[in-house]
Image (tube, rainbow, N blue to C red):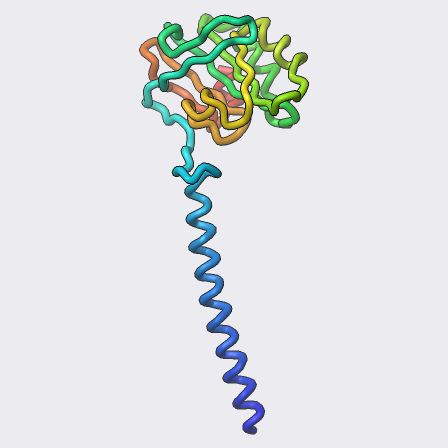
Length: 172
C-alpha cells in the first residue's frame, strides 16, 4: 500500500513538472511567433487602407524605382523561385499586368547566385522587375512575410487590395 501511495505521489509530481514545463514552452513559442529573426515584431503585411511605404530600388534594367515614381494605380508582387504557389500565380499576374492600365512591379526574391533569369525575363515583358536577396529593403518596406505577396495600390498610394486571396486580386 505504501508503494502504491508513493507511486501516486511520484506520478502527481511528474505531472505537475510536465505542466509547468508545457506552460513555459507555450509562452516561449508565443514569444517567438511574434518576433522575426531580427528580434523585432513580425509584420503581417500592409493592410487595406495603409499608405504605400517609402522605398527605393534599382530594376534589372538599371532604372531607379521609388515610391515617388509610382503614380497612379499599381500592381506590386513579390515572388520567390522554387515556390509552388508563386509558379501557379505567375501566369495570372502576367496576364493581369498585360491587360491592366496599372503600373506593374515585380520583386523576385532569391539568394545570391540563384538562377532567376527565366522568371525575370517573363516578368520584364509586363513589369519593372527588381531582384533582391531575402529580407531585402523592399520586403521590409512592404512587410512581406511569405510568397507570393501581391498588393494593389490606388492612384493616391493607398493599398486597396492585399494577397489575402492573391489569385482573386490578379484575376480581377
